Length: 493
Ligand code: TXE
Image 1: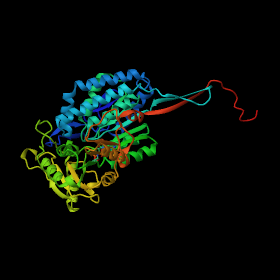
Image 2 (image 1 turned 180 degrees about the vertical axis):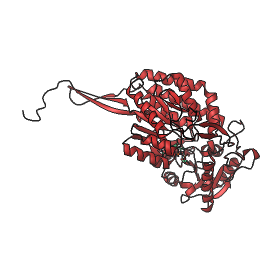
Image 3 (image 1 turned 30 degrees about the horizontal axis):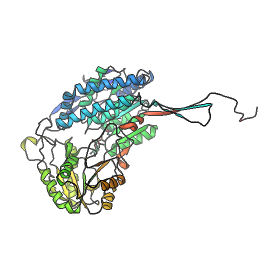
Image 4 (image 1 turned 90 degrees about the vertical axis):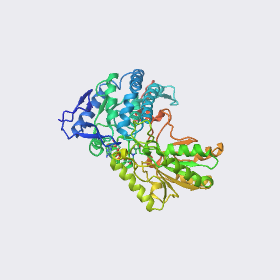
């Protein structure tokens, strides 16, 4: 035992039974140690899954009337809203995002709990016409069981609550594993959840690296469903584990998202939003508009203005109100992004902004990187095809509408995309042809808890939010009742 008690199992804070060495959580803006937390062993994971199983089987949560569960979710939403300042401060420190962004993440978390509280009892199933007046046939829903919720470091609170709120609304019990890079807002969330007095075993928390703790969790036979947000490589492993255990699985895996700009659109609005699309949270956003596709007539002017604006973005600590972009999540991640930049230059992309670490003295100990713009890109280049997950945007050129659609769909991913034009018919035509889970027209980034979120192709499986976001956490059951039973006479007496 290390004395640390950061795991939450069966309604209590506990330490790792194996006493594994704890892990330091670093501030990405200056490398300082924000906290030291314990690392779960396979035995701790087992205890957490057993606790969730007992919690599920005893029916205290899963058997609670749906309306009461909804009330609990509303209570949680209010607790989070009341703690907005504290939660966003923690998220800003740990994930390196600005306080403004972190506050919006808390608002998203609150909205998710409110939305799923409101829809939990909307749909109790339906009657089915069996074509026989003596048959009562009905469809109903049950919770799936014990869910493993694995969240990512870029939106620690938001990616978790998009899973937790629907999982709880549907009556499941859960074991949460946040990213080892950014566990602090999740720890705070668990602390706040105690105020809602959920039955013991409903929500459990394990901490530690994906390769060990995440693997132990997804391979555990007591898990019925895995909901994962992260990279493709880890997503593939999660899916393999799910396949071995025939577990339900949803994957939210990021993307390479096209942002199409037609020449007739308002120029400055499009440039301004292209920056937001690409560089919010230093591009560490699964739906980042990292691939600009710009029409011929405005291409050169667009590239010049984009580069000028990118060069003036202010980097800094998330808590500094002057900061527009924070650091990257880890030193290793920055090196990965830099490798992508080096490769892009070798492939012939024209660097017109950034590509380097900032020179300012006070940024030297953080994982900062200047917002980077590459022009003259084409789809043969790795920088156009691969997810970089950093402050890097590429610009390609197109002339016709058909070409724009072709380029935008020419990706293995399919999470999100946008189209900008003043021609109402054109934007609709283009949007209808884009094979991406979310398509924005003359906007970028907004999402709604009531609208499904998720991707085509390698962007993942299943959907979060919306009605489908709830249904991922429910089993469908058909009950067929014969009210006039009689011998079937299939076999002779
Ligand atoms: O995430 P990982 P990483 C993308 C982005 C980034 C890349 C890698 O391109 O550069 O993924 O990021 C847990 N079994 N996105 O390496 O490893 C892990 O502990 C079970 C996109 O930091 O995918 C963490 O909790 N769990 C993305 C979570 O999975 C495993 C957000 C994500 O970690 C595991 C983040 C395993 N085998 C990165 N391996 C998005 N969709 O927004 C890891 N984990």
